[in-house]
Amino acid sequence: MLSSQFLLSAPQVSLHPSKTVSENALFSIVIPSWNNLEFLKMCVASLQKNSRYAHQIIIHLNEANDGSRVWVDENNLDYSYSEQNIGICYAMNMARTLVKTEYLVYFNDDMYACPDWDYWLYEEIKEQRDSFFFISSTMIEPRETGNACVIAPFDCGSNLKDFDEQKLLENFEQLEKVDWQGTTWPPSVLPVLLWDMVGGYSTEFSPGMYSDPDFAMKLWQLGVRYFKGVGKSRIYHFMSKSTGKLTFKANGSRMFLNKWGLSSKFFTHHYLRRGEVWTEVLSMPRESIKLKLYRLLNQIKKRLR
Image (tube, rainbow, N blue to C red):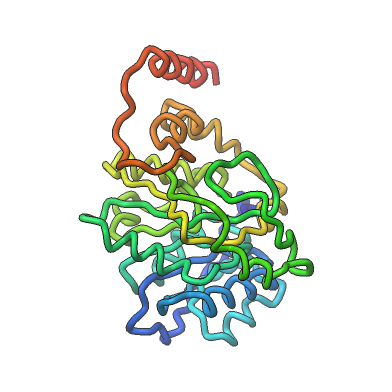
């Protein structure tokens, strides 16, 4: 979500707390948005309508030349604002300063929250013995992409004009999906304490490509081993309504490899075991010959780059 203009000049940024956050708010839901007003309206409406608990909703507005700033003001939502598109990493870190609760949720504006999405996440949180966990909802998507972590294809529309909300609400609970291993992406929840301990999102990955696995790796380095996708907590994802508009994309894959000495694919497959059925808390992968060979190949790739 970063424009080339961002590289040339510092943007004007500002914070706008609403002062109306409920004392009973459970989560602080941070939603970065980039001139995506109609999806943002849908996203916020679904959170307000389908959440079991009260939450703080925080928007980061990039540019906001589509009327989204006026809409957020009129609806008295907490928000941060940048006159230029500063990307997901800076947006999340800036919006975090408005957080008023114990838990931070990262949500995308092209997502629709299904009923009780928050109930099932909180039920999982209540089972935790400490603050070292990273938990996410399960996405329902209209197209099959080979992603083992999502429910797909279940087509309720790829745009708002053809969104079949009734079909989704009548069927989302019947779609089969168990808890799964190795989450790295939104909608995700973790303690604010944990977010702060690893310093939030790494801005060198701006505008945001591969910032999710980088954040997971920072959690892993801190000692987090509980990376769980909750099968009953469900979100409909319209897919790439912001990233699809990007004209500038940093090579996040190469940056991840150079930073950590192994590829993102290697990390999510061998460490996080992403997409496997949840069975246990993660541990360091066993040192097999195959794993050692993979590590060696990753080191060679890093040196060649």
